[in-house]
Picture 1 (cartoon, rainbow, N blue to C red):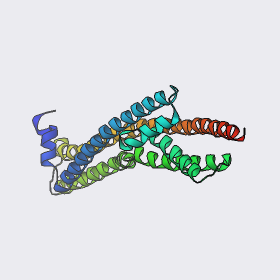
Picture 2: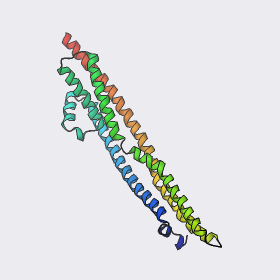
Picture 3: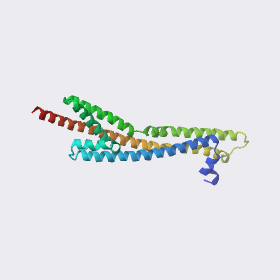
Length: 231
């Protein structure tokens, strides 16, 4: 590609509308990459915190001790720790009200954990819709710039009596750059969206499994306490 058809020259000589489309797509691409890196770090942090808490949970630590630790700095803990804390908090509130029915206690704890689970998943899934929008809309925005650029190029050629490939090529090449930038913005967003959606599904499944396992442990403890009280 000679100097006249270099990418920089094509961008500089494009029409105002095409340049505006290119600028918009570049800004969207930068925002998309920023969202990708933020989400990557956030999901890695969630996985690490969940694994740390689960390791402590299954190490045999007393549930009340875990609850006390989780209640001190809830913002510093992971989603699984906050889900556990919400279940224990509701359980203790019901016990303070002298409710000893196993079904009522477990119902309250499960509802509290499910509500906390939904809140945590809303946070984990944030910015995914932005990446989905970038992946689906950017190619069409780039295509709009290409169509406009080609229309502009042919309008300029209408006044010429003799048209050759050398006169047509620059205008079409300028227009096609918009589509290329649109794909440049869309492809990473689509790949990242698919990767993050898969990771989030795994996190959700892992946390739902924990809710069921913790509910079983809590139910056994409630049953054991009830038997002790009866005796």
